[in-house]
Length: 281
Image 1: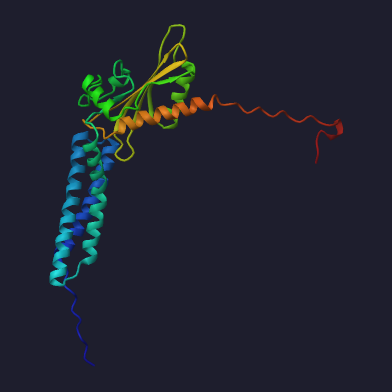
Image 2: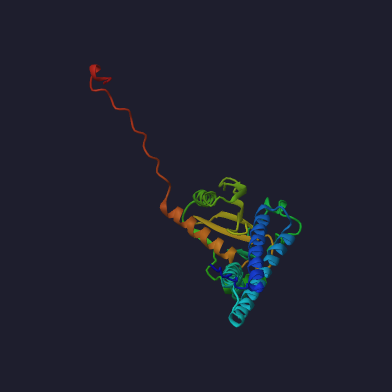
């Protein structure tokens, strides 16, 4: 019996290198995200590592397209490898492309507040910020105009609740969101003293640290709540600070609308019906 040798179909080297590049880019992206979130390196080299990984993802996409052309013309193998590289590369650059579109549509600001005239000041957080971070002072009139044009709904929260109730509601929301509270001072009517909460929030994916301050002042009808959220790094927050301020105020209003939590009454022990029935077996 004569055995026939079945020759394997030649594989496209472009497809092989496309998959290798895509998988290496995926690993580099995950490592870069871990580095940024952990703070093991300074923010600039960490972001440079992430940018390099995304560039490799783009290279993998180009190699996958080139491999597809070679497979079509020469009839070689490697379809699976090219498709894998294409899917991984597109998955890695899809979110950055989405952020790029947002950056084009939104103003290049990194500090958003409900009171541009007298913005709440960072005091405790100012002593914790690194030297290479953005300034803690508000950028001024130009930033306020850009904010008003893009986020016209960011306004002070005027409520008929007492300053203490407004402060407690804000503290409850911030605690529920698991932000790191740096300083918290309740308002005092005797002093008088405004209520202040300074906290550090983190972005969901990369874990960038953004600083938040909440100020509560008494008014004739109740209390006024002002919020300020500022990114530590970068000149463009991609709308993150405005979204954070908006969500915080909405949640505080929900807590105030719900009113104070009612304590459940402690059940009293049942009285014995008779001396002989004090204990039943």
